[in-house]
Each structure stands twice: as structure tokens, then as C-alpha cells.
Amino acid sequence: MKPARRILLFVAMTIAAAPRAQACSQVSFAPLVFPDQAGFVAFSGTVMGYTESDVEVSGVARPHGLVVTPATALVAPRAQGAVEIYPLETRPDCAPATREEKDLREQYPAGSVVTVVGKLIEVGGGNGAAGVTVVVTQADDFGHVARRPESVPQTPEGYLDFRSYRLQYENDSSTNFSLALAWRNAHRGWFEDYEFLRCLKALPSAAQREKCSLLRTMAWYSRFPGDREVYRGVVAGCGLPRAMQRTLVREFDAAHRKAR
Image (cartoon, rainbow, N blue to C red; front, side, top):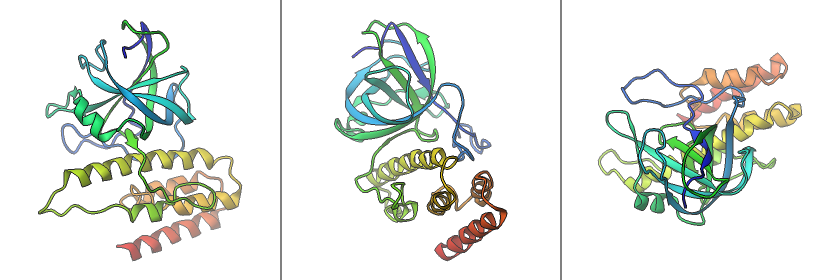
């Protein structure tokens, strides 16, 4: 499957870049509110197959990619039909590089459900059929392309139960590294980013009781234990009474002290 003559290209999106501790670091912190940048998209879909672009993508010649049919969306792509996704690696010199097709087949099997976070831009070129949408992202981007885990515990309201979910993460032994385990936890983390965005989207229109429920499960989002102020910022932006905000932050502190 080839890209279209006039295609829509998603580039890797960094919502809020962290300071560069190392030359290639692009790790992103969680946003305080749901992103509203022009062209931003976040959606889930099913892997239908694999492709190789005949157009240079983000400076990478002929990258290997996934063909995905979108199903549900936080922000849907404008185009209809199948989406081509190119999950790129980062080389030691910080330049993007293609992933091997064998690697993509192993990490994103045909029929699996994936979540995608990206930004929409329009480019020309390609020799394929019209109406193809193309997504590009790198492994250290916020959200990335995640394969949906087999077990996704949910709250009564239908959102991710972040506390139960984090218990499914195994730890690698420093003396017995497992690549398979590292990949599982990477997919779990990227999927958790997407579910965090789903909660952020629901917060503005939620009633006060549902807001509190959402914020209590979001308190166990894996990025928050190392950054209490991000959680405080999310709580402060929800329009809750000050007393309730203080209660939620105190609950956050008490819960994570016990979890250490």
C-alpha cells in the first residue's frame, strides 16, 4: 500500500518537552489541559497490515509502517479511511530512522488495537491511491503508538483505573534485563498516556462528582509520582472549590507516601 498523491502527514508531537538531559532526550511531560493545537489528533484503531512509503517521511527514506483503520477518536483525523502510521526510531546521532518490518509485525500484530497521538499537516507527493492519511511518531514522544494491553481495568464511569493498571507493570531486574518485558511496559506507558488524554477531555464538561472521581483515578497516572505539581495544576484548572482542590492534593500526597 502506497501513500497518496496528496496526503495528510502527522508529525511526532511533543506536548511539553522536558529539558534535554541528554542529546537525544525528547521525553514529554503530561499536559495540564487537553491539547487544542491546530491539527492535533488522538485516536484508536485496528492494525490491518503493513506498508513501506515511497515518499521520504521526516527525512527518512522508505520507512516501514502500519496500516490502521480508525475506530474511536478523541480528536479524529479529517481524512476518511485507512491510516498509514510510521513509528520511527531515534539513532544515536538523534536523527529519526525507520523501524524494521519484522519489528513492527512483532510489536503491532495484524488485528491488534492501537492508540495514536499526533499532529496533522498536509504534504504532497506519492504515487498511491487518493485519501490515505499518514502518521509519523518517534518512540520517545508522548502517547506514541501503543498496542492496547490485554487487561484494561476501568472505573465505574468507564475510564482507566490507573491504580489497578499500574500494578500490572512488572519491574526489570537490573541483572536480568528482558527485552520482551521492556516492550510490554513501553506499550503500557504509551497507552496510559492516551487514557490520560481521554480523562483530560472529559474533565471540563463533567459534573463536580465525576470530576472528583476522574481526578482521584488520574492521581495514579505513572507520570505523577515524580511530579506532584503537574497533578496540582490539573486539579487547579478544573473549576472545583478551593477546599475540594486541597482535599484532592492531600489525598494524592497521602496515597503516594504509602505507596513508596
